[in-house]
Image 1 (cartoon, helix red, strand yellow):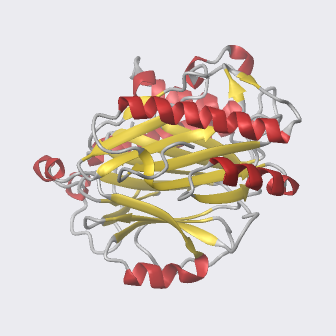
Image 2 (tube, helix red, strand yellow):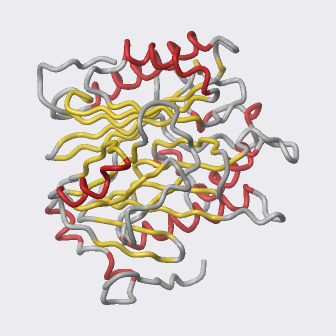
Length: 369
């Protein structure tokens, strides 16, 4: 790989990559301190101004919506139409001070222990998605290691036409090949370090990837009801999807469970083809099994999701919203924030996918999904 040449933004003083990352002694002294919530798009500016925390990233779901201003932290604009409620944005905040920079086309914002990164790559007509994914993941893996945040906790992947089959493989399968090869390069045991992940089809736009990385490893968790995604048989493509079902990050300030995109799959087989209600309930069953398994692995703290639960439901067909929304309100935690977006799922027969972020909190609140 060529030598990394950082391109700092803002007022960062040094051109050296090592100067962007705080010293190890400082990183060890601070626990993970991040917050994430949905905020009405019209209120984002006032929310950021009033908050005592420091912005890590802003996720907008309307690609044409203007960002709040010229920001140094990553601003992600996706083409994923919101299908319920007033427009919202996803706001990531850090209790600790944040340093922002842009290196080799990747935007970063980081505190002493956590890093949020974002990159997007246009697809040239003669370039395959496999090649783009390989290059993107190779870049983000190299940069996070060099900056001192070598442990990925969660990765989100978005690109259009996810179910299209231009040349033998679907575009999702092409993406999986490139991602797999990037993780596997020089890492024979890479499956042990795979983070929670998701891949969702947008209406349009480039390949967009945003991610969380940390100075300390999280606990990667699999679902007892499902075959590990990275162990899928080759009927799903020449390279299995490279992600964990969830990642648990524990610290003195609370535990965060980052749940990967979850759908109506048992073992490795899609369930209830064409039956929306049953697919939704099966997805919730998978989520509950995953959360129950994660709670068994917690070493301290209260129940995951007691203090805060954030979910995204990607719905393939907007007309399915009423049915899905009714079921989710019946089964998800009462304190949960739920955002419904129109997005295509990695398998064409799946009608929805749900992901989440659960935070451990005080006792006495509802614990189950």
